[in-house]
Image 1 (cartoon, rainbow, N blue to C red):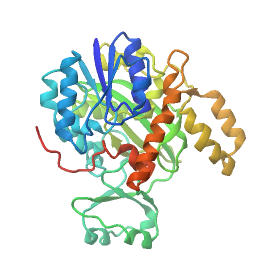
Image 2 (cartoon, helix red, strand yellow):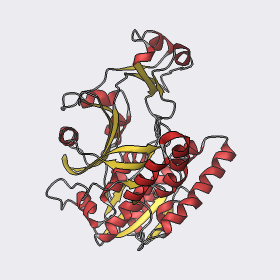
Image 3 (cartoon, rainbow, N blue to C red):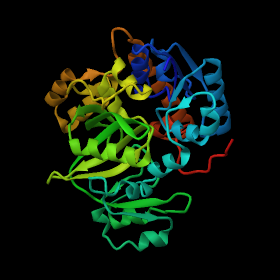
Image 4 (cartoon, rainbow, N blue to C red):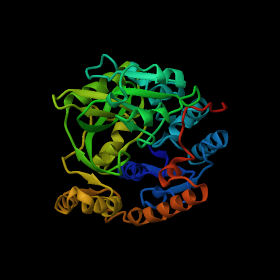
Length: 386
């Protein structure tokens, strides 16, 4: 692949992905609807383009991506964030001008759906917790399992937003599921959370990484990624990719129970932070272009971290009880994701993006986390077709 278009350029994973393709000799164009998206600061990007917001203007977004692909003679379009759903919706017209590295919209939606995914995942070597879908208060009231044995969350959600873990009956009564906004109740599994990241092409697994989110913002996004090796998880991922003839990036959340059993909780059919464990070198690009003859894995067991978050959120957590000594030790042994001597600008530009997100959150009266994805997320709404 000589010319690659990476969308979702606001995400740190887009920076590492751009670096990987550039190191492999590709010309990289990055795109996003955010005004200060991170990847535009990277030397790995030959060009950066702002596009319409996919959630609010899906047709205009798809048209802009197609125009970029034609103008820049793009060979491969690689989504990174939830804009993948909108690209998948317009897959036919985009594939007329370039290879689109994702499956069609219908399969993306099935994997993103926290209840439908559990049906897909059964029989592939790991446990799947019992999961109930609720589209009305009546279905919620009909649950026979006590709430303290369950986890409740919207069918479509991210960053553990609105997730209730073993809640009180009073907290459950505040949930109002509807056909347009259904919820799931899932059997609670105690244990350590593990997260995977993988690339597959034509049903064959080409890259895999697994990590524990050792430091994270509450129950949401991690910012410190501790490598873990569990062959059963890679085998599960390879089995699912083969079953679905999957092409694209795909990630899963697991719980490793005290008895060693592994339970798959949900799926993200897009890039996630496990990508950082590959380090931004040329190796990962081979998982996308079809030249990898075996499953690629990170070269070492060194953790990766988002330094700005570790220096702020992590420091606050350490002071509040997690331990300053542990914070220092963990910080010293990890590789900072955004900073490299050859490409230092993204490590500083991250603050411009953060400022823009905080300003948007203040204007809209929403949380910064919600503001960071409001223009790209997909929560089951109908997307107008071409």
